[in-house]
Image 1 (cartoon, rainbow, N blue to C red):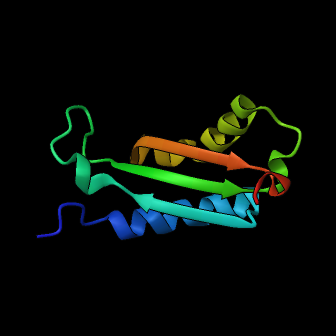
Image 2: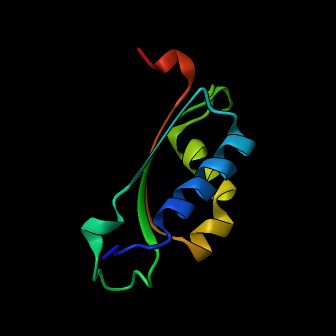
Length: 95
């Protein structure tokens, strides 16, 4: 039994939206939804961790970066994302 039948398509929707808006040089998406099955308030939405490295983060504070990602994913947060863990960096911040 697959506890999150739309998980693959959710990841691909997230990937497409982030790539189109932020043009990352690195994008990693981890779906942690299976670890949160039965989580109160989830409403069938998923839990995701994103690592995003983008030129668009250069010179921005952590709060500005996270707001940018949340703005980009606003539609998916309403429909598909319950929890989101972000790691956002500019290219020069990655070793």
